[in-house]
Amino acid sequence: MRQCLKNSQRGDGLKIGLYQFDSNVFLAPMAGITDQPFRELCCRLGAGLAVSEMVSSNPKVWNTEKSKLRMIHSEEAGIRSVQIAGCCPDELAYAAQVNRDNGAQIIDINMGCPAKKVNKKLAGSALLKEPAQVEQIVKAVVNSVNIPVTLKIRTGWCENSRNGIEIAKIAEDNGIASLAVHGRTRNDFYKGNAEYDTIKAIKQAVSIPVVANGDITSVEKAEQVLSYTGADAIMIGRGAQGQPWIFREINHFLKTGTKMAAPSVNEVRSILLGHVMELHQFYGDYMGVRIARKHVSWYVHSLALLGEKSSEEFGESFSAMFAGNQGKAFRATFNGLSSTSEQLETLNFCFDQLVH
Image 1 (cartoon, one colour):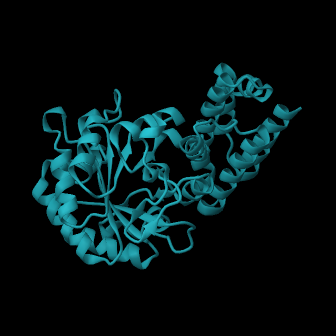
Image 2 (image 1 turned 60 degrees about the vertical axis):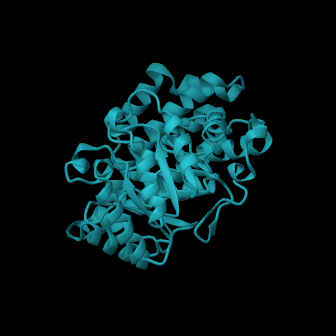
């Protein structure tokens, strides 16, 4: 199977606009998750591109604290791709300009979000039902900025309206530089399994780079999806939660055909504590504590699975500390903590137990 992968599928020479990527394994935009601390962490651990959580195109909400934090780009490392969401072509074009001026180097348009609160405003994946509106939006945004504009979609609105190829051709004809496709319809939400036949068909129908997304949670699945679809890159979403090292593992597997050793206890400790500290510094103590809780919960889940899969001694330690009722007890304790110092002390104590 490895012989079927082109050089570009191993991350060699993939370009979006003028930007060339060392890795073709990207972090998918996820609202409330892919904030600046998580994006920078994933890039350090091998993600070729980390797309921001979506920013509303409605200027009326830009003065909220949440929006202000999402619209700071200039000091961020790596190639800065910012996703915007909305339904009005003029608003989206203006949002693209504002985010470009704030440091965005690529603008990504959201036409894949399945959330009801987004779709009822005719934004996100609801736009897939309106190809004419898609064309107007793409034209307006592409013509408003002098940086690459990309698009993220699903395969269609529902099983009976799987029009991903039509949308892809509209995107290509109107200047979209790259297209990411999640292998589900909007009505699928995140249920069942992603399908890759539509992504494969889209790749065959257009000449712009296509990025495959959906259910890629292991190095084997990454290679299978690249090989089957012919996509130029893959995008990891939920598969990166609690295991941001998945990017370097996939990069290594695609290039060598061998698996990397699992991260050590000390490295996991460094990654997790560093992530929590970055969250506190970025959001401040009050919000940082609360946002850290969900990330730590994902780490606990991932470490329990890592422990089950590993035959190494530290794998047994992970299982003993984080699996089953022990994991539930740890999460309950951690979620009850209310300060930065308490969270860091608890995590340090936990890892001290693992190495002794």
